[in-house]
Image 1: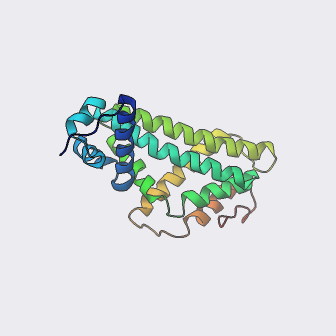
Image 2: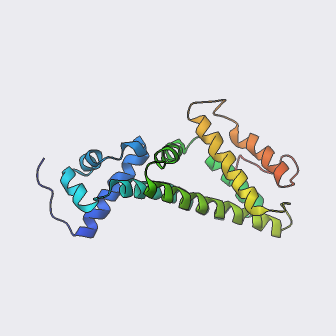
Image 3: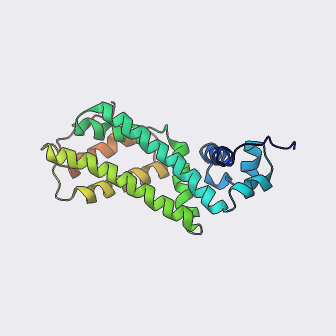
Length: 204
């Protein structure tokens, strides 16, 4: 391999972190290794080790970059939706339509790999907290508007997040079916939040 062109340290570090993120999204978190990141960036493994001496931390950073970008995208999508009901409908639609399976793989691998990678485990906890806080905000807005009914919006957000994660993980092996998940979950959420059947439109 030819010698990599010299770059400012922060630029090189960011380039390698981006390579790790792209690997995670394309091939899963387990694919983020010293050699694979080096090959992706077109540099030597020694250069990767120089800028990112702790691979556990680089894996954690790749995870955070992937799932953080998804949360930012979902937030933007929901802002356009308007009312709490439509925001919740948009959340279910975009997270359960099968278009984000690459991110689901990253999540599932992170839960498993985080058992032996504390940096990754901490990143997973932080991102789960961020997702729960976001969903909590949507539900709390609905309660304040008199649309949703629940005595514990935070607990409802955790429950909904768990159901979304579980259904998406099951869908990776096409069980029980990869279609209709959003509509089925919408019916359960309507019951959980005191909504009439059919109020959450997952075709938005």
